[in-house]
Image 1 (cartoon, rainbow, N blue to C red):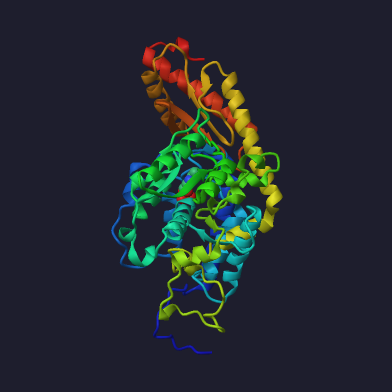
Image 2 (cartoon, helix red, strand yellow):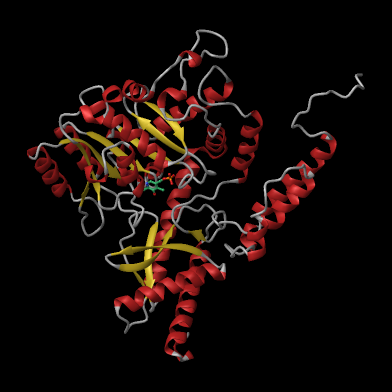
Length: 496
Ligand SMILES: *Cc1c(COP(=O)(O)O)cnc(C)c1O
């Protein structure tokens, strides 16, 4: 036994036994935290003293593991975003699962770099991408990549579209070498990340033609065809149509079959933003609503939304593997791929996206898909859609609440309307109602504005929600809405 202390330092624990005790304790705390989530408030404001604690200077000297963990338990853990709670329906966010949280621990422990190379983790991601191709009925020779989320997935897909259809070597020459200005199309309801992608691709926001929507918020395809024809006549170069499978505002579904046909006829790239709705393909009763998805040239999807996985987990699929690789592959000497050894492996994910160093997000996806099987995910998605209809019915049945948009998927937009108020007043009333709802910690929907009407918006991608949770939401809206009105009118008689 070497009793001489080593002159070198490392960052491993000095006392493994004490660390092991603490680590077990941390794990137990986190399991309790997940198991008991329903008993806590969804959200509570971060107190001033906690904000102050989180503004301290850079630590120069070590603190004990125990102390650092305690700081977390006291100052961070009690103030969650709330998205793991059964009554969180804000924006579009998944909950994560206990098993996937364990997968994150395993992935962080192995800590591989997923840029490429011949190691186990790389084959896990290849397997996951293959499974996702199967799930979305893409051909086996298609390619794909796990990314941070649908924003990145859309950017990657649209980059491939732009580079493939430019008609010249845009990577070498840049946009300036183009004869005509490239333009693409999406509905007015398209997610903001597609606007950002158009900016980042150097096309500019004006190149993203926003096509009007019909009454149900899906893209008006006649208007799309007119816009394409007008752009061609004016000397622009149309190259892509982005269809949305589940818009962020209302869950509206563009007619993907119709867009696929237009793209085929016009020689355009068909990209689908399926961040919310693509996974509806797993629920046999409703998969018809995303029919046409499998005809796209590329698609973006999110696993951290309606597949309930922990952040971050998104995926891009590209039908043509060569087109995908040609858009991103750039292999300098120091990244040379070998025939044998660790630098082998025929698939380097860094050849298919922006990131070189990448984390092992594939593990939680692989473990979750194995844990439940896709049929279970299909049932959860169907359950959320049934809950959306249930909430819609509850809102319709309430004399003071009203539904503000069709509910084709899992998003319900509604508002409190006691009658006798103008639109401006109703907007203010509902803004105040939403804030009080958040502050109450009872439930967290978010908001949107449809045709100038401010609405509360519940996006149900929550595997923990039960029917009674929606009844609690409706009751809370009635009560808090009534309180606001009573305060405004200065008489309590209006509260129920
Ligand atoms: C959330 C969302 C995005 C962006 O996805 P991130 O995972 O947040 O990057 C894109 N499109 C739609 C329709 C979305 O709902």
